[in-house]
Every structure is written in structure tokens, then in C-alpha cells.
Amino acid sequence: MKRLTHALTAAGLVGLSISAAHAQSSVTLYGIIDTGLLYTNNQKGESNYQMASGTLSGSRWGMRGTEDLGGGLQALYVLENGFSSTTGTLGQNGREFGRAAYVGLAGAFGRVTAGRQNDAAVDFIGPIASSNQWGGGLAAHPGDTDNYYVNARISNSVKYLGNDYAGFRVSGLYSFGGTAGNFANNRLWSLGAQYARGPLTVAASYLNASQPNTSMYDGTAGAASISPIYSGYTSARTLQSRASARRTRSARQPSMSSTRIRAFRISARRRARRRSCAFAAIPQSSTTSKRA
Picture 1 (tube, one colour):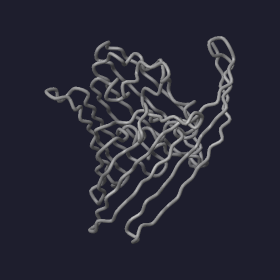
Picture 2: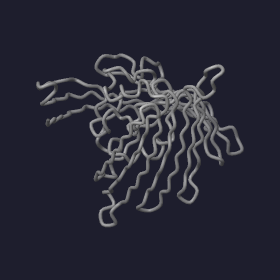
Picture 3: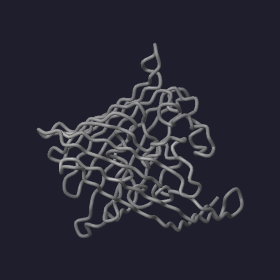
Picture 4: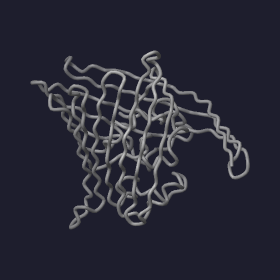
């Protein structure tokens, strides 16, 4: 069955930077409104015209702030709301700040944050995936179960993101399950690493989620409105995701690069295995980040 989808997207970007009473503090308000008109030539045997929000980038508004604490130490916070630009409803299962809500400290040691935020794979694998480079949601893997398009955020989590040391960076996240008497229930942890120098970027990540329908998908894995691909994870006890990616830029055409991503994930209950592989030519000049 062949399926063809065309998207015409009007995206509005707004950003406002406000300085506090002294130069060491700042607050930034930002947002995106992305509304698209979609045509699908085969949807359950019929063609369909639709209006959609977040075709290329999720509609959102948010604020981020920093405060200089002295001695090279800085406090920070991010609050980011997701919404539908076609209906006005809240995204991320009705959360006020479902895309991000965290506070932290940054310094020479790196950055430590606590709250609702992205896992380690999003830090290093996600930014060089075609969906985040140029393709938007239409280029994401089915259901975005690998989360490279950043549909899942991790609540109740503590995260470390290291600074760049000679091209190397590392990241680690742990999410507390919050179940009395069962510390491992609903917990999630992930690790990531990246080397980026010159034309070469290499990244790898690992994620382990207990009860992924709760700890990763906010209890929406079985909702058809989210994606029927998720339904296989409603009863999984454990989800593991291993991924590696490599991007190289052309010496003759620095604006073009190629990316290869490999992912391997296992559902412990069903022992189901799936592999996915993507290859794309990426215009480096159009690189965008879905992260806060």
C-alpha cells in the first residue's frame, strides 16, 4: 500500500529576551506556532485533507532563566508548555508544562537539573536524526518509539550533562519511580556519550525503563490518538533501548552531511525485538533542536 503525505506549514516564531535588574540575571520568553495543511492520498482507503498542529515542530511557548551565583556557578530553570495550534488544547496528556519543567545548577563541572526533562538519548542521538534536522514528524520512525523526535519527556528525574572536553561529552539521567516499598517500579535511567570534532560526530546511548507505559509514555501507550505503534508497550515490564549514530560532513560541501542511526530495543515481557535503521542526506544549515 502506498501512502503519500504532503504538508504545507506556516510556522510563527517568537522570542523575547528580558534582562533583570542586573546583568548577571536573565529571563527569555520564546515560542513556536506551527499549523499545517495535510493531504493524504490513502487513509483507510480514502483520501483526506486535514489541519494539523506541529507538523514540522511542536507548537509551544516557554520561559528559561539564569542567575549568576558567583564563582562560575549559575542557577537555571526552564518551563515549557506544549499546545495544539488548531484546537488550543494542552499537549503532553494535558500537562501545563509538559514539554519541560526543571531547575538546576551549571558550572565548570557541567550541568545538574531536576524535574521533567529529556533523556540522554535525546541529548546526543536525537539532534542528528533526520526528523530533528529537516523532516519534522513526517520523518520520525513509526510512533517515535525510539524517542528521537522527543515525544516522551521523563518526569521526576535528576540529570547530569557534562561540558565539552576535547570533543567528548557525557550525559546521565535517573527517574525515581515513586512507589513505596518498590524502588525499581516505574523507574527509568539512561546514559549517553558523544564525540564531535571537525566533520565527524559519533554518539551512543542506552535507556532502561521499568513499566514504560507509565515511566516513559505517561500512561498513553494504548491510546490510538497517540499512535497504535505504542500499544505493544502497554503491558511491557521493561523496555531497553541501545542506539549509536554517526554523522560526517562532506569536505567539498560542508553544508551537506550524512547520518546513520541504528537502534535495538527489547521488551522483557514479550521478548519482542525490533531493529530500525535510517540514512539521510542532511542540510547542515537547517539544523534545529527540539529541546528546551
